[in-house]
Image (tube, rainbow, N blue to C red; front, side):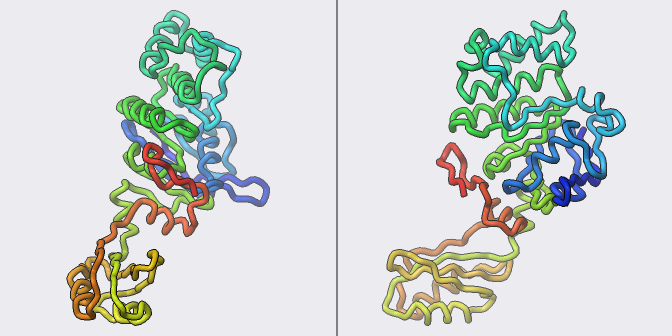
Length: 327
């Protein structure tokens, strides 16, 4: 439904998108993930025919964005990050106006609007002015607008930006329901949103795709080693413990962590190694009390940082519903 073929976009000497290619099929929600300035929004503007690529092209449901931009646009429902709403218009008036612009037949217009008001859960807001709505309901109105022409492709740029935890859960559920019969490309900088909502994830950095796959495939890609965290108590010198742990078979690296007076270490080993027994034996053999031992798992955050080589640049690492951490 979406096929991007070697798309590049330059602004003067700045290469914002660099030879990007990917596909999105019907029934898929594909997350477009990357740090601020990575090229996500530029790629989406190219796909929606808002700007032309410098090179390469794309097709939307078979319509080439360069050869038939009008046809490509007719197959897209687009929700930009800053939803373009008219505050002085009522919700019904706005949706009627947008349905007219999108060519929804007059005979079907009111039925389609009523259907989307129900789907998007804005019945209670239908007779209010848009300027009176909360951010969450404004996003719902914007999503209803994107769906008016029943497009087979949806392109959503940060659809949950600025929403509270409850609204985020509702919008995610709504997107999943809509996706059953459509292809959805969803840009986000919220890791749990990509992990919880999307079938596949594309990671873009400095204009280039650096990773693609399901969450599981990306985690597999990044899990090049095993990591263990242990907390010890005793009179031994931490530097000596560090050196001793480093000599254990299959250990590749040992880092001492700050732990409020306790001796805490992160031990890395070759992939597939299970050091738990060796670490336990080391503690007992050196008269140390083992307070904690964890086999750490690779997270999507680890994948992102490994593939982009960044320190998150605005990426939200934790779920908004559980208290997000914006780095």
